[in-house]
Image (cartoon, rainbow, N blue to C red; front, side, top):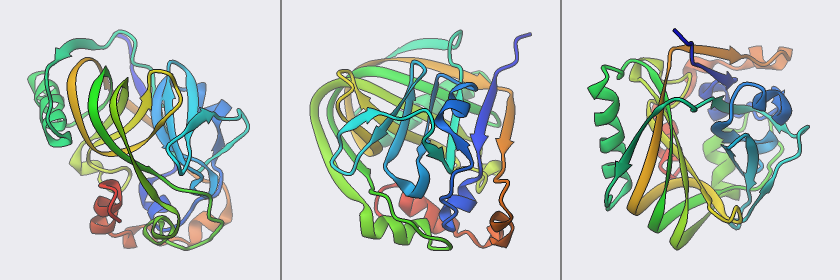
Length: 242
């Protein structure tokens, strides 16, 4: 049986507490997957990996291909080819999309497994965000984003949602539940999604049965008390209102 591994750079707890130093490069990350999401050194925008290309969403919602040597403090990536595909109808909000995706993985008894999905579709509205670089150490992600984060919206556009699901027992290693980033079909706009309305879409869903985590190698990593990361703050940041 083929093994499907997800590769993760660092932990969300470390990022939440302000560890924004590079742990890997974009080039190294892409060796482990063609689909994924994350951020860049010093939280310099939002990362979207699609079709083996890494994109960087800027503070104004524009995106560009990232440099292979760009630093990555936190990200996840995996290969989705061979996954389950299905059509999705009208979805009025992000909760309806999350519910539909969760029902699909529950059908395959997958709620305790990690999943990656890509949804190619037409979107009525997308509310997203991205930040600008902020050099810091031991400054929380919540505080960084309060200084740099900008919200923006896209209307009536074709594009792709990259969605990652982690089960609740892995909360802290990553955010439990679904996490979504968006990139437009023309590859000109995107960001971290906190609300979306979709007219229709085609989903490719891949269940992962193995996880590899690259922890930071620097001694500075061991100065962080990761258990102190606030799950409430993480949840607020995840929804874009941190």
